[in-house]
Amino acid sequence: MTPEDFIAKWRANTRLERAACQEHFIDLCGLLNEPTPNTDPTGATHAFEKGAAKATGGDGWADVWRKGCFAWEYKGKHRDLEAAHRQLLLYAGALGNPPLLVTCDMDRFVIRTNWTNAISERTEILLPDLCRDAVLTPHGKPAAWPTVDAIVGNPPFLGNKAMIGTLGEDYTARLRARLRAATTSATGQLRRRSRR
Image 1 (cartoon, rainbow, N blue to C red):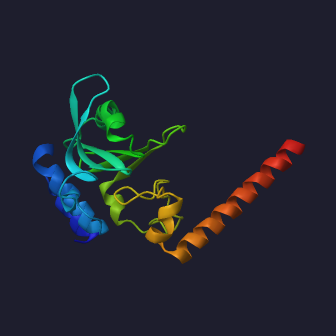
Image 2: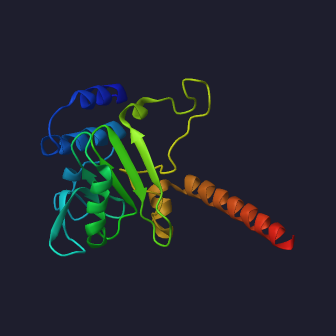
Image 3: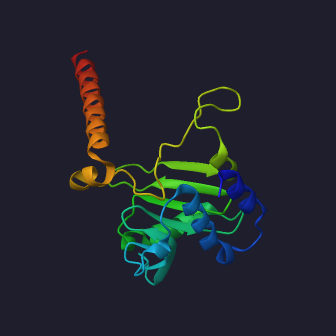
């Protein structure tokens, strides 16, 4: 499925959330070449309808969940995604506080970071954005992409020991060098500012 096919299919969709959300997510996984929740036969690390206790009592269900990555709540088209986010917050703790909380109405994806000790950031991606040029806008300006660069796949918190095995030795070395350079630059800027 191409991005254009995905957009056309889901723009035309008029089915209710319950009838469409799992197929929507499976199509998105196919588009991104990511495993679907059904590749985990037990649902221990990736699942549709992941049950969890709500912070206020009772049970809740994340429409899609991937351990250490995200919790995802679908709503019908043009529904209140802020309400969906509040719903996710009720059982995020029982789901291990995933680093990304995603709400979606098939036309819009709202991604919120859920990092420990950090203010949450909100990014909204519209269905047509899945097909846009990665480098330039139609007006020739640099494309503005969300700061969240991984949703369905494992975000970049693999842990020190898993990085080389997952990302490869060369990429991990370049990533660590870039991080050291950024840290050194930021530390130098802070020192210069503190001397003023």
